[in-house]
Image 1 (tube, one colour):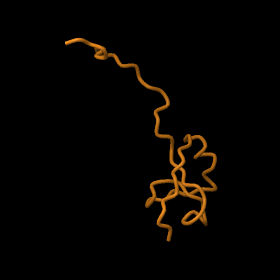
Image 2 (cartoon, helix red, strand yellow; image 1 turned 60 degrees about the vertical axis):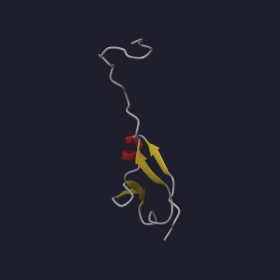
Image 3 (cartoon, helix red, strand yellow; image 1 turned 30 degrees about the horizontal axis):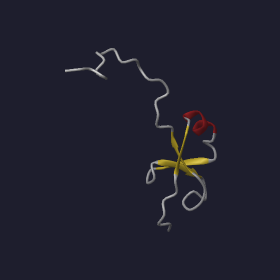
Length: 67
């Protein structure tokens, strides 16, 4: 078994959906790995972490505010 973790690659949910037949979800890794050989070879994919669109902040602006 590998002792070095393979780096996680973050891709959009669209590509995860397109590549779904080639990958399976591993609950142990909390990521998608290649079917058949994913336990030891190939990429480890996770859904993109960043939000697609940010909501506008409606509160008061506190940056550069003087007390």
